Length: 357
Image 1 (cartoon, rainbow, N blue to C red):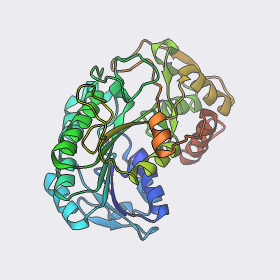
Image 2 (image 1 turned 90 degrees about the vertical axis):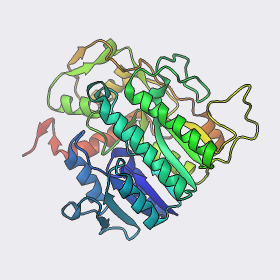
Image 3 (image 1 turned 90 degrees about the horizontal axis):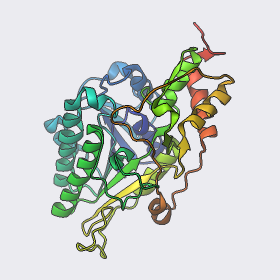
């Protein structure tokens, strides 16, 4: 298939592009390479897929020097005309929209960035998909949409009308917007609610990255909500394998959907919502202990109150992914943390907890 991956210089997008390339799809990646975090990490991800940093300029197609079936274009989702031109030129079969303004805490500081990228940008994607009759739009939602819900595990059948951050609200909005387009225009859409993704080439603002960096630099780590938190930590390879399964099976509409007893995860339109996580909740302090064990040291911990916008626990009910897609996450936190730290120490040249010049 010919597949567009937005956010291809991002964490999950980078890993998805590599997997799609390996299985033989024709892949076009786009990213605006914004400076929400270190752009050098984004350029290095692109380099891993054969995209030469020196060749990148806005709107220019770059052919991979490693893979004949991969091209990259620096492009912003808010560029309506640029997106329209690209969609018309490439005639995609499938779109995987992973581009977004990420970060729960940053949404407290810069809310307008989330409206521009996650709302206006997503609308542009929907319009392009509608006008070009895309066979399947897969897009990133988030476990953060569950908000104040405390019924565990989080099910796609649960109500998600009480977000606690604008980031979460923007992702919930994406699901509502997608349903409208699925209903009005017959556009097949699938929302994937990701649960705390981690692994090599991860985002520097995520917990594993922050903890590892601080411990290796002999600095204290901050533990929020005094350690009374749980997360469904999901290794990136498991996430990508789930996405690949979903790409190949677009929704056709739930013939049994009942407006008198509406299922929020499906519709009579070609629309669905799926949780994609490990399916196992881990205490934050146990996660930290696994990092300490791997590094052979004990971190200095500073206990802090719960941050605004954070939820206390997450735990994914992945039964629909298992039943419909034979999804089976395999990587536990010990294995996943070890793989991340192996990458981290090489990438940043850490050895024996000291920076090697």
